[in-house]
Image (cartoon, rainbow, N blue to C red; front, side):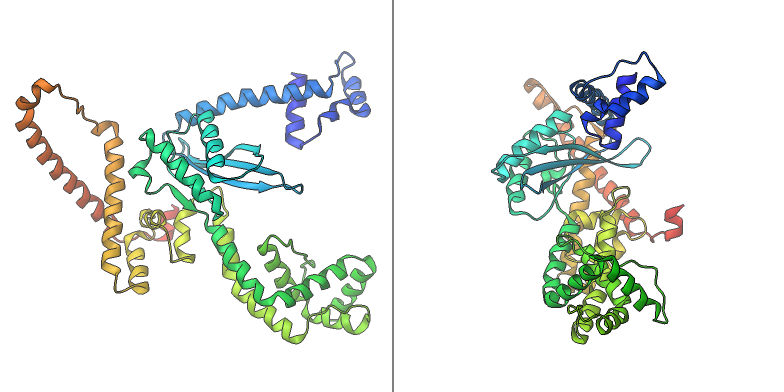
Amino acid sequence: MYRAKMAMTIIKHNYHFQFVEHERIRDIHSFLNPTVKSISRNTAKADVLKLFERDKVTFKRTLESVASRICPTSDLWSSLTSDGYLALMAHYIDEDWVLQKKILNFRHVPPPHSGSILAKRVIHLLKDWGIDKKIFTLTLDNAKYNDGLVDVLKCHILLGNSLSCDGKFFHIRCGAHVLNLIVQEGLKVIDEARHSVRESVKYIRDSKARKIKFAECLAQLPSSCSKKVQQDIVTRWNSTYLMLECALVYRLAYSRLQLVDTNFRTCPSEEEWERVKRITRFLKPFYEITILFSGCRYPTANLYFHGVWKIQLLIKVAIILDPRYKLQFVEFCLKNLDLVNFTNRVKSIREKLYLLFEDYVSRSPASTFNRTFKKGRREYCSCFMYLLKNCRSKRRMKRRKSLWRILRVSCCTRRQYNH
């Protein structure tokens, strides 16, 4: 029990394995229980791995029992030393209808990072977890190698006939990453102004005396604000947005500091401040949408349509299935965006909805039918099979009409939806 508790402590607080060999830690344990037997870092490492393998087996059983499809997401991370790491997450709905997100793997991936090689690794990981036949979608960013990864992975899963609608809904491009690319292009317009703000923030934060002087400048202004001066992370545009937003609040304080501190030479000019003001107003909806998309404890596919109108098929289906919007909202958007092709687009969506619906009906245990007939009975059964096919066609049309009726009824209010 002691060793298990120590292993859980190391995992929970991200301690180094040498933690168990620290002299004072051993003193505390001996004080609490003189008979306790101290362990080495190698023993601690073995205990952590043992705990991991035990929990992995338990979680594999959980994934096997999940009735819903599983939607993995994957990303390639780079360390400070440029080492590549593959992250694989699973998103699914549990038996209590709660959206779950679990990190399955975070593994070092040596180069080359081509699509085919990464696909083999992802396939191996999915098989290891026993979910390679339960995949519905795979969400990736827009990196070039991901197109090759999707092609190889899709072909592999299709061989097992386990993808819905032959993989038409398989590949999802990360909405947050698409927005990130758009914003990065927009930020290039104010490169000089952004640099001036960033250097101004660095100048203040690098010295305690400057922080005090800046606080004095703030105290002389009529308005008060509790925000701290924020410095951005170059690779994260949302932190740049927060830095610019905060800088605008303290615009007068920066100007006053420039008057009292002759060494402060990086204060943005009036023209640069105006550029920052305009770009911050432009970035605000992107920031809010990114925060919305970045949620992992609630569905985000149905929220995508509001921010981006050039949308994938699956996103349209998601918004239609949301009772607050349904088909009316998608029809309204498409009609305003492309009146010429509006009818054909709606027809295409309807056909894809029917296709997805029939796929789920065919996989339902209640609708399965034994289609295996012996060769000698084909002639005897030909009339029966013709009649059965005709009945199936009528039932299919009836199901489609029912589905269409549900999607055409009035949307529920947000209050009704939340209740």
